[in-house]
Length: 474
Image 1 (cartoon, rainbow, N blue to C red):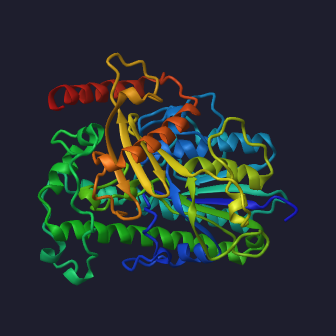
Image 2 (tube, rainbow, N blue to C red; image 1 turned 180 degrees about the vertical axis):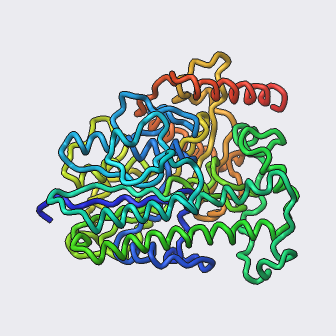
Image 3 (cartoon, rainbow, N blue to C red; image 1 turned 60 degrees about the horizontal axis):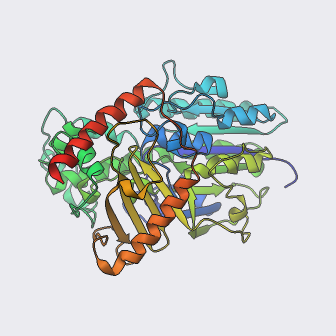
């Protein structure tokens, strides 16, 4: 390949790594994502930087972790001086386009990209039934009419399967009988409960206060509703989730079909990923926001429908840890554009081309400002920072003395994360190794004070709740 390719970054919302039929899931059918799998390399150890929409997307846009971007949760605000991928590409003469969901608060997508479609009113969290079809139509118009000689970058943000959240919101104010009683589906049609439906209650204080207690900081009304669910209702949640994935797979299929009909497909690189996953009943949890695998592990496929770009096709990479911060440098690499200095990510291009290169040996993840995780080949370590007595709005870390509770899981013997080993003396050295890795990563971060009033308000309110829990429950 002597010239830069066109680049499509197709992303879905709330899409777990294993919710793809090519990855062996028998309860849904994703023929179009499967086609990307067959025509590319699928990285099976791919992790988001933070399991919530805006935070993870701020990492896509900047190549930085969320304690650096100013967006540690959905109410964050991107630091105005951080360049985003559209600005960098445009400044280098590469044409950046955007279509669909963006959700990076503090950055006007229309100023960084040429937008094909972003809604008359900016696309928000939900509404896939309307927005995704409109997004595909705009992409179709672009692909069939593009006559530029220079290559382009187009990111396509689909909302689904995020609309599973809207399904959950339906239960906030009313009790709905299970689907078998309603005659919607037969019990045989429902996927089984996840094997890790039960959970170890020795979770971090951050997770309890955000997601478990009666007045949980995140989606307390849904939490109260699902406590009355029977097994069939949990299984129906999973069933619905898979239908939303099949809907977005169909949208992706329309884009791929159009691409094949043009002369562009031989020289178009396709990156497919998701911002974060969906719990879907694992650990009796719903949506995202947690550091369990179902929320943080996401698909990441690099493909080409033709033969114009060197890619090891139909390959499943089980070893290399990929992070959401890698999207930015990967795009820059293929575009032939110099990436900004101090990015946390690395281009995956050498891995896609089958080259043997030095690579990270773990994945680092943040959550809800105070939460942290490190994932190694064998173990996963989850912990939290205790909130500061006087909040200075500088994201915490690295500081082992402020670590709170923790979890340690053996990924080989306990992939479902059901047995917390952190208190077992036999694993004390493993805990220390994981802590050292986490601290080493955090020492590389350019953590910056949160200055926007909205996230400062959230940090203050949540921090007070966490301090109160520590005082009265520990």
